[in-house]
Amino acid sequence: MFNDVQIKPVGLDKSIFKQPAKIKVHYGFQNTFKQTASDVLAEVQKALVEYKSKSVLITGHSLGATIATLDAVMLHEQLDSSVKITVVVFGLPRMGNQYWANYVDSTIGPGYHRVTDRLDPVVNLPPRLLHYYHPSGEIHIEDVNSAGQATKVFKCPGQENIHCSAGNSLIHAILLNHRGPYFENISFQCKKH
Image: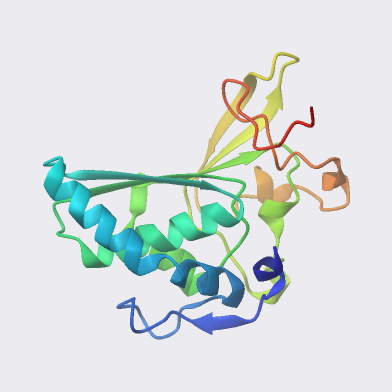
């Protein structure tokens, strides 16, 4: 949780990434990612050989979504180009500058999907006024029925589409749709017994 508030933008770690120089990402997110990056790379490489696979699916929610996104870019840079990388993240906060968003678009491209839930305030943090931007690939859940099923879902073209989550007001988002439900009544919350 503490890493979430360490919003200072920093360059990507050059010992891990081969990136354009102008990219800046959230310090706390990158710092958390670096704790497992070498293990993730080693285990994915091992699994690709062991299972004779040519594809990797990466997913995460909230802080886990930021780590999944950084993992995806790292894997894209480190693995053979024949390996297909697909990313599906939920409740992703903004994590880098415009150059970062463009880099995710150019490296992962149409294999990148970020699911946003109704008025979730987390997906609009840190704010754009601090020069943080989302990459393309948003799938926005606008409505959920009483059974927790998504009933209105939109594929949002481009980055920061104001007709999807980027158009939500943080004031109205206090309703906290961050934990879901997303699809098929999947929520990211603990139930107290």
